[in-house]
Image 1 (tube, helix red, strand yellow):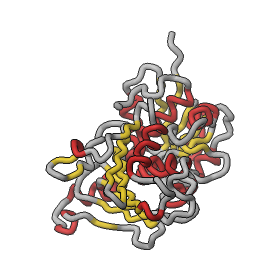
Image 2 (cartoon, one colour):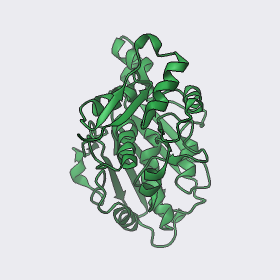
Image 3 (cartoon, rainbow, N blue to C red):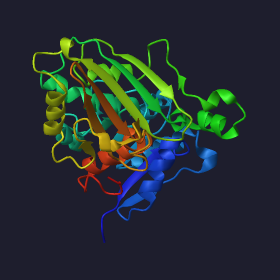
Image 4 (cartoon, one colour):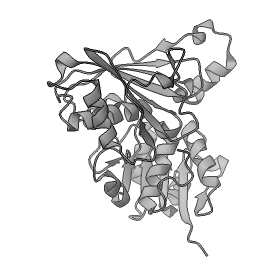
Length: 317
């Protein structure tokens, strides 16, 4: 009989938890533990299930995720935290396998994995290889804009859009104008940048899909760092990756009558990277499904790596 890995999702009613459940419920190699609805807030029962699992996903608010971590005393239990709580914490491995050489090995060995944020995943995937290659200075003050579907706001925002009746929801809505979005710490920590990026997230009137754009001026970069050089560095870094595609330089085929499709990676675990260039500047774009590679898909990918099974098992490239 094939060995079945025991998995528990703490916070299985949320958007990310539900997606993880959907993916894992179809797998014969996974035994899913479930908590009775009436015991969802029973600390003793949650602790029992967390410690019974080979892998436990924490799909919880930050404070509740920290509480869950404190409940675990089984050294075999691997925690994959989908909250913001541990993305820059000592002792936790950042759950982006494509980040840098050796990251997969770190994830296989880890018992504490911090799942990346959706905006941060695209931003880091664009910038980390360029910083490592010396094409983007560590000291460069970077700006980024992210356009995302409203499912990223969780159940309250989904319900708000589903209810309709508010004309303000028909237009894009910039937010986090305090310039302190919760993904910024990981965007700095895992790119090698020294300065906080000027980051503007925008919610659009669509359910899922996300695109982060980063403008760069050649005058701020080392000599020779033009669009072609940036594109080549990304292509080298992600060569052979299953879930990250570096699209052709200044890819006009990706445009529909001149417009970029933010939802082009929906229902997949794919991350598409683009470089558009002109004589004096370049625009980097990273596109993903905020519910896929930006959340549940990334978590399952990390679980697969940790368990030593096919990294893409259950995931759509």
